[in-house]
Structure formats: structure tokens, C-alpha cells
Image (cartoon, rainbow, N blue to C red; front, side):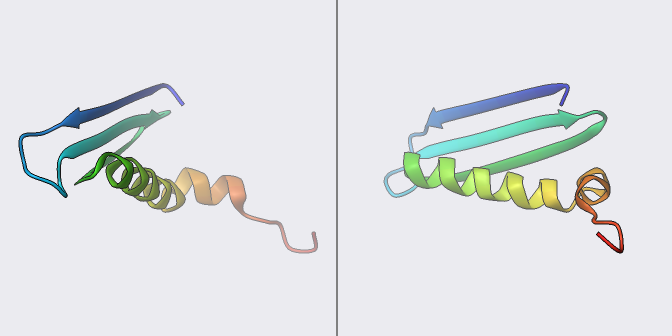
Length: 71
């Protein structure tokens, strides 16, 4: 991992969307972005979930987690 930037902001919208969470990560040239809005807890949790899904879909992740036949 070369770079990660995470932000959590309170926004002027009324609840339940009063926070915005955002993550940008550079995984050796593969850039992943995730952003969600909700309560502070929801925004953080949903952004983590989205980032995890995007990571699992990257070719690099697939190559690293693949199990060789016969193991």
C-alpha cells in the first residue's frame, strides 16, 4: 500500500445523513475509492464495507488469495 487518505466530515444535512466518510487508497498503482453518508457510525461502517468489496474485486487481491490446486 502506497497511500491512504480517510476523511470523516459532519455535513449540514439533517439526520440521518449528517456525516460523510470517504477513503482513497493507492495499492501499488490500483486506486480504490469509497464514500458513503449516514450517521457517523453508519458512514464509517458502510465505507469500510465498500472499500473491502472493492479490494476483493481487484486483480492483485485475487492473485494473492488464490490457492494452488493440491494444497
